[in-house]
Image (cartoon, rainbow, N blue to C red):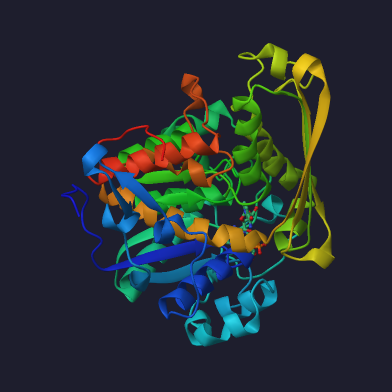
Length: 442
Ligand SMILES: NC(=O)c1ccc[n+]([C@@H]2O[C@H](COP(=O)([O-])OP(=O)(O)OC[C@H]3O[C@@H](n4cnc5c(N)ncnc54)[C@H](O)[C@@H]3O)[C@@H](O)[C@H]2O)c1
């Protein structure tokens, strides 16, 4: 390995997951199985991808771990919080994502992962009614209790470092309020005043993580760390933050397919995306206020790839306020499918002289199977970023996210194009590995 300035990945890495549901238990089970050699971590870039470093005669194709010091799967220790008290084994069985034969070999380890009581407010996810909840706390007391949880976990498990990952349910949509969410002092005052309308429980987790020296990753579309006050806190604590919303199925396809239309200068008059899914995530998203959070996240993908202001002839048709072409996203809760989501995309494009054509994509995916490797990559790369002294929003992680964070107060745009995101990811790894960034394509 070339001399990188990143601190080595010594000791144990604690991964504290908020939520012990389908995604988190699939993630944990896969890591535990992989390190026993009983399963392959397919889909994980940190475990499989090889990228070029150096140019010309010096070019080499290496795994990320041969470029930068990444934590090893063997060094990971899991912990979690959940509204329901079931341990990770019971939760994995309940989720029915994995077969029993793929869970049982690590049953004992999973049984030891027992959720700590959640910082929860039923108003933020009405369809959940578990009782493993920190009772009667103000928002600020939630922060303090969560900080204590992180400290206790770190000490009990002998972890050197901790990363906190939100893989809990999508909360209701919290519109950004400049009086509360722009300045850190205002955010803290609101937490102390127990302002439950503007302070989501997820913000308490994020605040606790950052002040305890742990990077925080938002895997749901919640606003949580995507507010200037949290960017300020991340800067003050010199901790990385990343979000929002794992880019798993339909949006992955969208961010990879839209560039085909854009690069080929074809027109778009509409893109209709619909989904059916039947897991607990789908149940929570069946609630309109929770779906709104997801909808905002899913809709944002196309706007920055196919831009009506840059190509009015191609993308200025239709009258959708944000995108001009018609872009609709629907999620329907349909229990028989459980975690096996089905997504349909109907894309109305047009070509030479405006003649219409259609593209149909039918993705029969497995939500948690696609999300688990993203959890691993986001945790390992955030831990790496912290050791490299990087703090604040980690834009190089946009690759993994549906609604990547960016400084909207400065008019910055999100990068949603999958190939641009991949370049950003590789360049950050090159830089952390002591190589020059570049944009050569290979
Ligand atoms: N699977 C995917 O493809 C995918 C993609 C993008 C985003 N996500 C997001 O990931 C999250 C997890 O998805 P899932 O399928 O595992 O859902 P899930 O319902 O199986 O698990 C979520 C768990 O979070 C718990 N929870 C809710 N609020 C909590 C709180 N305040 N503190 C602690 N625990 C809390 C719930 O009790 C539940 O057990 C969802 O927000 C989902 O939208 C998933």
